[in-house]
Amino acid sequence: CLRWELIKLEMDLCYAEHFHCFSVFVCLTWACVPPADPGAPVASRPEIYYCRSPNMEDFTCWWHPVDNLTSGQQAAYILTYSKDMEPELECPDYMSGGLHSCYFDKSHTSIWMYYCMTVTAMTPHRNYTSQQHCLDVAEIVEPEAPVNLTFSLRDAGGDEAGHSVLLSWTYPAPEVLRYGWITLLYELQYRRIGETDNWQVKHHLREPHVELLGLRPDDYIVRVRCRSHNSRLWSKWSAALLVSIPNSLAAGKVLVLVLVVGVGAVALLVIAFGVIPQSRRIKDYFLPPIPKPRIIGIDPLLLKVMHPGKSSYSALSARFDPVPSFFCLSPEGEL
Image (cartoon, rainbow, N blue to C red):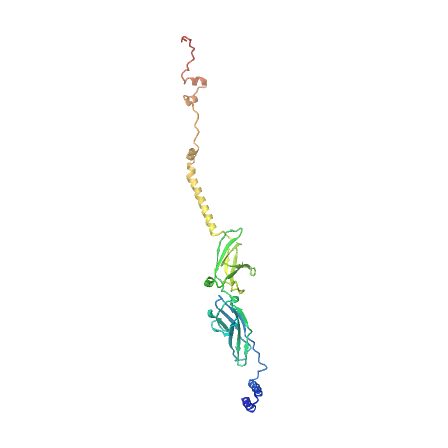
């Protein structure tokens, strides 16, 4: 470069004048840098736009690269971070999180400490550094979406008061909850299939199950999501579940109805073929006949064949021995 030869000559001429030589060196060196094309677009700075921790044990940050680079121009990226007032360090893993990301494993993740980081894009002409991005790991916890959303029809209210449906789900990483690193809050939404935007919401559920009461027979769409108690970042929605509430009686009620009708029919058959033919004997057993009054010595047949001309007294008196008369005895014992 001709300018470098001029720099060397100038340094030899003004060796004693240090300050003047230094000024000339800086100016001439800067003149060796190719001037920027006035029509070339100005590259923007990179931007850290998203950081996520699924379990408060590790986390990943992603950034937008610089754009508007000239054709064929490439940029290399370096992420540097510091925890609280500790010395600045470089990203430990650029690969695990994918393109334009930095992954912090368990050994590089500290809870309740503030991370501040920047991303620098290095190009052949200059470097572009993002704005500083600071975070607390507890505030970027975004858990996984719940899975295994199922339902069971309780049918406690019947068709008049509506049906009762028990919904339950599970978290895909139960060991995180077992160790107590995070406490999850759930939100459940449900709606009829025909009502696209009319979601009914159950907020702040602490258990992975909830019972819906008074649901009318219809088809419903149900979904659930969760978030950490210390974070405002919700997980993605679970897979939608179709809940169909039948309009007819439940199978249990139909079975009970069939049993009642069957037992009633058997009872009627027993009464028709077993009790009715023996009704006379049963009546005689429980209600025996009252005996007719009889006078000893009176023949009933005699009363039936009694002649009309005879008096009742004469006919009856013939059946009995004469009644002895009363006698009067004298003091001497004579009649």
